[in-house]
Image (cartoon, rainbow, N blue to C red; front, side, top):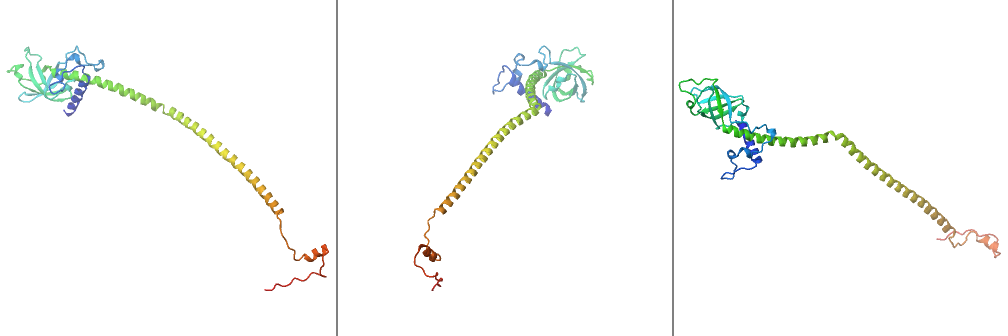
Length: 270
């Protein structure tokens, strides 16, 4: 039942989003029971047939209580899964000639079964007869027809969502499949950038080495010129010298009066 409640809730939400026109109730909400058939946008993928009468189907009694108030019905109609607790169900006995329908209310739903509470069985069934298990019933329910239409609208919405998701998945699959190609392409682009950067690096290094060689040559040239200047400075240095030991020889050469021999060096007096 809890699962069915959520299922019906999502059906209702989808129906509100896909109707072409709806009459709001006093509190502003959409009354789903007032929606006309022709206002529902039902796609062909929903398998809903407007010409088919979904209100009627057949069933068979599989179990009942001692008072015949609670009856369990099996049906080959797969749409009974859209029943909800409290839905009105009308039925009559298949072999009974009486056109009158009894009324019941859905209590619970199982797969291929639903349980209903029968208000008064003897409207459509003779009192003198025994209500047996296995009795075939002709059942009709406007509520079920309404919910089938709601389910068809919701299914059309799900189909649109599925198409959208498939489109997205296809795009993602293409990206995944092309991953290797994109990886090679990106790697090639970055390899090209790396080669260009490597080329610029080598060019910069070569330029630095060229500047270094020029500086070395300039250094050698400047060093050589400095050495040359130092030598010339040494050569052209003017010195004032007063000969001490060579004085006697110099005077002798110049013809100045001199002693017979040079005097011995006198000791320094402190």
